[in-house]
Length: 346
Image (cartoon, rainbow, N blue to C red; front, side, top):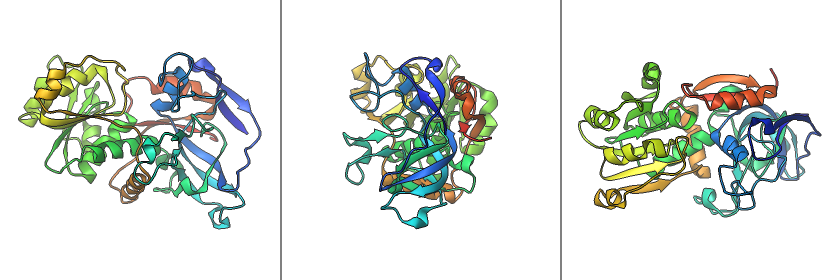
């Protein structure tokens, strides 16, 4: 089969197209013919070594073992099952839950042995992938591409919204609102949980599209008076911030939060380190949340909301698998709306 391998930490030149044997499923696994795999920041940061310092970086302390096939947002068709798997799973169209864990129910995502597909296991930048049968779920939509844009970013966004306990009367600021997580934060917070959303982007030409997703207001981070604009459109401080940007909007986020407000971050595309005046934190009674991925039950609730039409796929474009380098370069450009998806077969 055809696959993309990351050969080490570095730039996109570390992505190589290879031919290799189709993997064999173990007793409790299935072989999935990959139909679509969307790109996330996580596999780019994995390649760049952004999850650690020195020579080791990954979801686990020992770092990634190269070469590794990246890709965690995967849909496909089950074409072979292991000895312990029901034959009835053959030919099912599935979406893959993106990690393994021995953590107890509700704590799977923070278990010490949490291991991620595309980092600790070979992932979806390939024509086939093996994965535990119990972590394969029915696709929420009939289309492979549309169903492939939710697993990592959708689970992350859903967990963020549940973590801060969004209420219908609240106002939520969503940063990086045109990205994979941000565009889903808008939909989940507004259309599932009923909150008012202020979306923050760079390009205001996206305003109407973001309002279609559920944003009430759309503002640009390029404004010299962003904090004042946020407070003005809300007629006062806001309840919570759902952030994927990090340093670039951290100070503004704390400034616009009400007393007792909540700040939840799941990424740092705008800077991984920041300065914090602790007086802001304790004098305003602000709660900070770090958030990555989520639980199995949250994933099920996410898939249910997608199948009910409450959450829509937002797709910017697709690339053939052979153009994985170009796709990752494009992914990092500003101004796109939604997900970038790799297709093993065109």
